[in-house]
View (cartoon, rainbow, N blue to C red):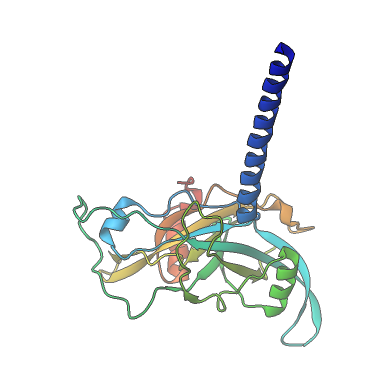
Length: 279
């Protein structure tokens, strides 16, 4: 009798452990299914001050896969012939999460006058890569290359939209504990990057409608947009370039920058944002 009770007790413990292990594995699998390699994400989406100063603020949760590099046979638009081309690309996923709004009474004074938008909020991304080497900056706008996009989609085993195709209304909100996400997937592409580049920064605007009106150096008002910044470094050289050389330099963080990419690049350099720690 005593042996049977001990056997029953041991069986219950084993079954309980198996159940817990199975539940943890399912949770881990579900998390991996949602992540799918999108491992780079910012910590902060919106501050209380931002929410108080702009009641209509929205911010997309953006996560990225590591920066990629691949050599492709692409058609030269001038000659019409296929040529080996080194392509840098970055794929990303955007999800709109519910934002907890502060009470109507706030210690903050509204900074931005609210103007009713003419239609539904739109996602219009603008992605710029800026190299930062030896005090010199080069600006590379995101490129639309359908031929390269097809190769990237096959390589990543998923359909990603370029910066034009992805323009549209924001996706429906997805709660943090949802099993499925209302996500949109995009790709940024660059070619002709200086092969000697060691340090570079990616500016990603359009992920939020956050803005600030700031007085410029000439006394005129400027509009600065909420922009996501991710810095990288590449400890290789111009010969035998490999994508495993890419290293994120800290986590992505939010700043407000001028609309013009040249002005934004100059501001990053003047304020030494390239050395800013992740926030």
